[in-house]
Amino acid sequence: VPFDGNPIAPETERFLKETHRLLIGGQWVEGSGELETRDPATGLVLARFQTGGAAEVDRAVKAARAAFEGPWGRMTVAERTALLHKLARVMDANATLLTELDVIDNGMPRFIAGLTTANCVEMIDYYAGAVMRIEGTIIAPPRHIAAETEALTYTLREPVGVAGQIVPWNVPLSTAILKLAPALAAGCTVVMKPSEETPLSALALGGMILEAGIPAGVVNIVNGLGAEAGQALAEHPGVDKISFTGSTATGKRIIQAALGNLKKVSLELGGKSPVVVMPDADLALAVPGVAMATFFLQGQNCMAGTRIFAHAAIHDALMEGVTAFCKVMTLGHGLDPATTQGPMISDGHAAKVMGYIERAKADGVTLVVGGEKLDRPGNFIQPTVFSGCDNAMPLMREEIFGPVMAVQKFESDDLDAIAALANDTPYGLSGSVWTRDLSTAHRLVKRIRAGHVSINCHGAVGTNIPFGGYGQSGWGREFGQEGLDAYLETKAVTARL
Ligand code: NAD
Image (cartoon, rainbow, N blue to C red; front, top):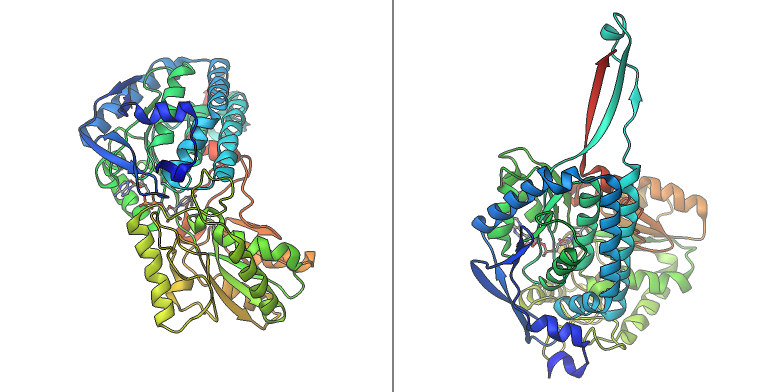
């Protein structure tokens, strides 16, 4: 039974029946290959979609270059702002389609997809508003010129050029938009490569970009495999900047591929984020907060707080609460309103996650709750908690990207020692601190090496809040002003007057 018997909107049904091609130069064009995408909650094929390789990427880059040097580059900021706002309105009018596509293609619960669609609309409006605030500065001219004559030095902020954007599967529409919106606001043109696991919402977005009247070639979408379309995009000498979100291992390949023309590189990579629960934490907040730090998006979340450091004074109470929370989580199809946790994206990924669980069991790590894959179609893994962990274990070191929490008890009240535990990881994307003591909270936050740290909440990202990683979690920042700066060059100009 499709979607486990849950209804989809007529527009989603119609979209799934369409032929899904590549968007190049404002046209839907034939690809050179074809793949299928499945509903991870049922394993049933949702749609087939065409894919591209090096040749299609090359065409798309040329189309993006022509648009950059042509209509998009020549447009006034007022026109660019208006077109971005128009895109936001078209997306808003199609919010049900965008939301349902991410639910059925990725497996995430509908309430999460609904929120991410709304955030995407907000993000386009936010960056549309930022277009008119792209500003340079006036600076004192260099001494050797100013000594001879009057002079003026100022800076211009100019678009980087053609941006290649490579998107993962875990929050497909959201990651596409958080790259697309600042790039377009900056005046760049784009070739986007969505994930082969979740191509659908980006394809629907392509239609909306055309409907909004954004000129041909400004946004090109080439679906395909990472090793083919993705690699070709990262290597292409006509691409000025590559913005990549995905695993740390692939991020390292992107850097190598980008070396040829030294294109600018932004990387949003993996994480293994610490969650520190102090003895005075408000457990009414911390229990659901810590559980959702790990289990939000079934753990397929770069910010997931999967290393829990629980002070001995509250460790047992926290475990009891989190266990109860896990037992009431409802695993099911994302379209079912009762669902709070969806499936793993694919058979292969579920096998990887279960590998970590089985290994931990075999190593004698204490299993507090969960630990099984459900005996039903789709890849549903129970929310799983292991206690008695330490930083040497694979459970604590490696990004599992599934619903697996590893808990370590600590006794110390020394903030440096606690921070040393939290920082014992190659990653540095996110983290959280749970305490009623404001002084402890801020002192600990200062000691944690991560790009985004929350107090008494976790992963509280937002359109206007810079986001990115320390260490092997990435290079650069997305969201907010820094997200826009990532698509701008600075040109300094000096004039003898
Ligand atoms: P992935 O690295 O396997 O793939 C990401 C994208 O890169 C896909 O589009 C894929 O096709 C493409 N790709 C793969 N090999 C490539 C290559 N050689 N050259 C160019 N492109 C290539 O990651 P994934 O499994 O799709 O996503 C999960 C990972 O993404 C996790 O590690 C997660 O932490 C990370 N992630 C990070 C953030 C963040 O903001 N830091 C956000 C979401 C996900």
